[in-house]
Amino acid sequence: MFGTYSDLVAAWKAFRGKENFAVREVACVGAPRTLLCVELGDYRAPAIAIATGIHGDERTGPIALYELVRDSLLDPRYSYRLWPCMNPTGFDRGTRGNSEGIDLNRTFGRGGSSPEAKAILTATRDHRYVLSLDLHDDLDEEGFYCYSYGDHAWAETMCAALSSDLAVDPVHTPDPEQERRELGGLSYSLAFARRGMARVGTLEAPGRLPENRRVALIRSAVLAALTAKLLTPPPL
Image (cartoon, rainbow, N blue to C red; front, side):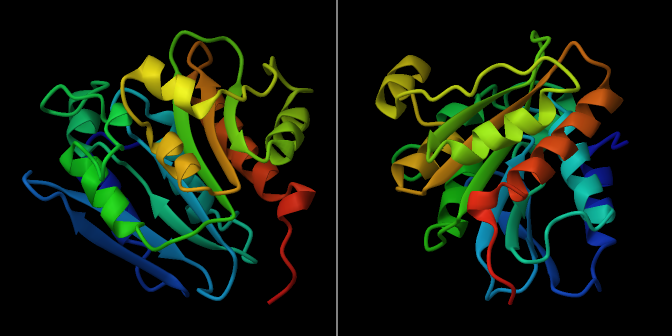
């Protein structure tokens, strides 16, 4: 769908004018690039963060997130902070890392050790979310799985909703400190979990499925997470 990062930016900016929708570009200090940041919904509502595209060779999440907004599928009882592609240079190159060869999903400790992580952490410094999702592909997997931090009930509900259609692994509930040591740094989700947010999850679509099926799966997973009973907010 998106041949280049510029195509993705143009598609998101075309939404300008939608009600309760704002898109801006956040500067990556020390690097000649910016990140798209989208705010959607009524600011008084409980807030959800959804991020994707941190690995440039994983295209499912950016496409799925765009389609969820395009098709007006996100639950309007929430407000949203969206990061449509956290790794613009990797997206253009089709590489896991950015143009400097850095795996950004190890750089969210100590305020951010990459320009991209620093920009995201600075922009979210004073924000709290009832749920944070990070959308990925696992290029070697045949089944969907989820890493969940904090309250796991929403993740179990989400996976149960998907399990009738394909292989779904049990919810993974890693110890954050052990994972940090194994990764050699903080991932996007680990950084949010360490800030004490109640529900944080990394969703992994199986890379061995065709792209259109992975996109449909991630769309379904996000919608299932948003409809988990523990998350349902009162009407505005």
